[in-house]
Length: 234
Length: 234
Image (tube, rainbow over all chains, first blue to last red):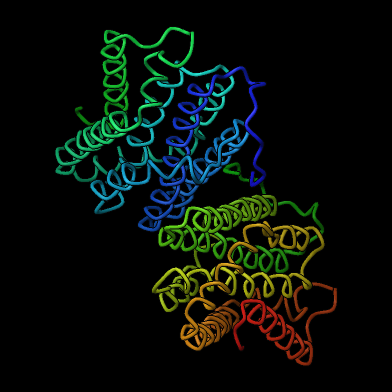
């Protein structure tokens, strides 16, 4: 992982396309390492050891995804640390604005935030080379047992104190809002990344404006499904 | 891991020995999950992404060790969560009393604290059945690259600001002192565990008072080696 491969064109990527792909992988890689830290930190709020282990397990999964993504960046001739740097501010801003005040908020964030990030990365991955796409798709898988444990614990928390349902529904909406805000900041700043999505740096079809609209709809639909699974109105 | 095996005597352990072994594994398992959470939380203090990844990597290793230990508890007919519960207070007290104030203290703690814990567990493992011993010995391995990264960063931090050397040496001594204090609290409270170490619950030889003295000397020697590696006087 620390070995850096020399830039090669054996992957069939043009220079501009490679630049955009490394940017995208860098964004996802920073997202996973910051997700790791936040989830692991939030797991400290869990007194129940089963929940602590489930949150820790989700965090560890993020770390492994981070390693897979870093390896792919290196393969493409990039340096993972350099590739991640431009995305630090956006992810840290997201986490600073969505600091859970208690375990229930932390668990909702782990499930909802992770879900939004995964959906988003998989949507964007449609516009990149097949090998990098596979890496991103592989990196989104979570351990279902951990996720199920968290979802059940949130539902039970709301059942035990029904006054929490309303504020937690607002919390879920805020997570989505902040994620979209930071996503737009990133998209506006990173030209090579935008070119990649819009198909300007490779000869596969890019996203049309209409498709970007559909993408937003799919993100919203899936967010609502997850909110429903938690027993919250989206 | 969540499947619980029925108690069996196919492992050749007597009831009292099994009880002590499950206690020991429970202590180590709680140590690894709390080590995971603290190291991961401390990794948040790292702005340098290489250090963040190294601390996160050490934390993740702890989590995997936790899983291996939990599996062995289950194999012996125990429940990991129940087995860990009695050790929560001692480990949480250790962490509460040794909360790093900055990244340098955090890195010294990751290296020194983890080292003391590993030495201690391996010493105790001498008195348990070979299969459980192997599990504990396997669980102490760290990724040397991560550890080397941390050690170099501490040495560099002291080189850059030599006034930090003295306080960090004191910090290292305090980590050792707090670890020994909590270790003694645990030993005094857990009868089955003490019986196991003293050889009262199985027919292999247990530790004599003289051997306990040697054990303490070995722990101290290895602690001094690590302090020296960081460039600190023990």
